[in-house]
Length: 95
Image (cartoon, rainbow, N blue to C red; front, side, top):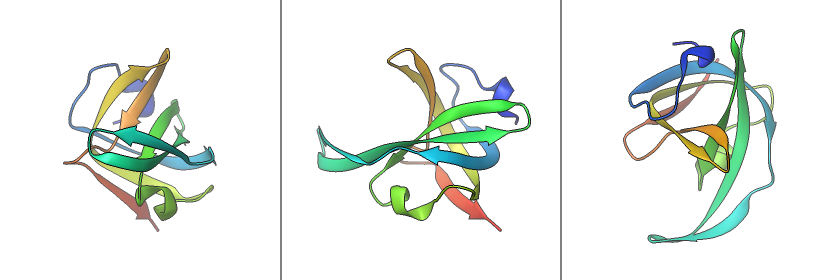
């Protein structure tokens, strides 16, 4: 799937692209306890989307990496479309 084809409310999203930027991690309190969260911009030839990185996934990627998100889902947060890996999804760095 191309990033341009991703819409709000989609489930089982699989996309591949390059990380072009990553924000500084912030600590947030969730119902599961305190954890770190950051957003990365995931870009392919069709467009870009914000990729939400939680906890250990923040350290898995760096700017310039080609990554694949499998079984992700989308939502809007503060007016921007975001892609989440979620509990059942996978984030892989592609060589």
